[in-house]
Length: 69
Image 1 (cartoon, helix red, strand yellow):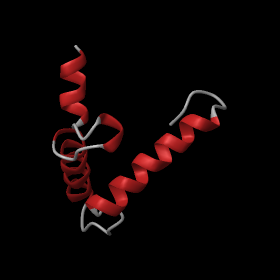
Image 2 (cartoon, rainbow, N blue to C red):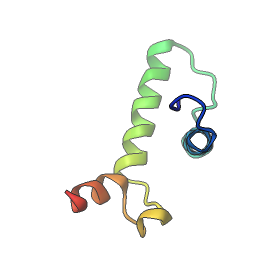
Image 3 (cartoon, rainbow, N blue to C red):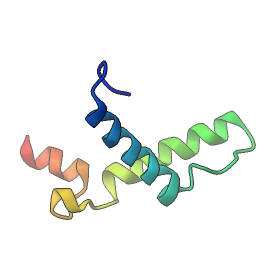
């Protein structure tokens, strides 16, 4: 998930993966592959458009991106 041997990028990827697993139950066992795909798509959508982030002054990534553009 990172460029080459950049260990700091890996920490960010690990943090995001942990949030997706813990807050959006993506560490569950899914009955089918399509069910897992749907759960991942839903979690990513909620992470980007609904969940506010302290690092973005309690904005969503979607709102922060469009505010900066």
